[in-house]
Image (cartoon, rainbow, N blue to C red; front, side, top):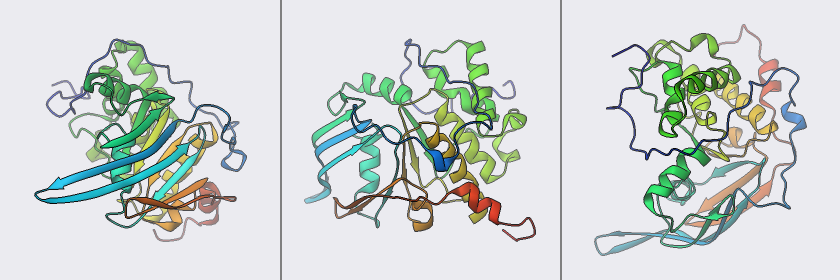
Length: 290
């Protein structure tokens, strides 16, 4: 196999679509808005996420487990929502439903104003590929494929022409500061660099929504803040991000905190002054051990 080419045997199952996705814009430059000048969410338009009376139950033998119990929540364009809660609280189930990886038992879920809870499977797969970018704790990179090959994978399933895929893939890597590592495979990259590749992959189809599941869980403290700095910059430029975390210090970087417990939302609050990751990094000296 040619070095850097995605290996179909490793690829996840997604449905190919011929629809042309929105193009990724040019990589941001230093003149872009800093995190402390982020755009305010537009609460007058259509929410990116709108769920109403969302319920999900699982049957385990004779036992019925209610993972979601009538969730009602809206997420607006430009928000950076941190989802928290103990194990079994329903936050992971919620993220699976919002990510179109699972269907609710009942209730409504609209993504960009489109009802998706009862959408046919093939349409749901197309929608997921074009509208949602995923970032995982374990990076989920193809190990035999270089950084650029990993980033362009969603565009292959979206039917984007090869020359366009390369240009957009390089632009996405440039946006996360990894253009110089485009031809390096995951085992040649640090954990933080692998997560940056995953972020670039999530960006490449210009999705309406970025879902991040514990994206700093496998990273050390400084690298975690570096990743948060990238996500905050993307959010300042208008990206809508929903991030699951167990760490209060990571949640403090968001513009909004939502806490789940026993299948309910028990707290939903705006964060008036999010921690600014760039300022945190500036306060650390190079002599400190991390």
